[in-house]
Length: 132
Image (cartoon, rainbow, N blue to C red; front, side):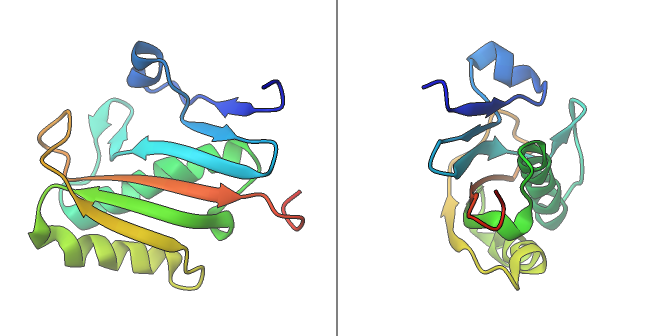
C-alpha cells in the first residue's frame, strides 16, 4: 500500500493509539479520523456549536495538508452525547457545509474520552479531477 498517503497532526492520541489523522487512498478517497475540539491539548470552545466548528476545523487542517478543503468533503459524521445538542451541532454543520451538501449522519453516543467533549466529527473527502 505504498500509494496510500498518511497525515499526522501531532495530537497525542495519534502516537499513543497508532493512527493517522487522515489517510488518502489511491482512488482519491480521503478518510479523516474522528476530530474533537481539542486544540493544543486543551478543549477549545465550550458549547456544542463551538465544539463542532472547532472539530471540523481540525479536520479541515488535515485535509489542507493533502491539498484539499471543505469543498472536497463528500460525507460527514457527527457523534454527539446529548439529543439536546442536535440543533446547535446541525446549525454549525449548515454554516460550514450549506453550499457543499455532503452526505451526513448525526449519531448519539454515550460519551467521549473526556466528559467535557460533547461532539466528535469525521469527514470523508474525494480528490476528483478538479482537485488533482
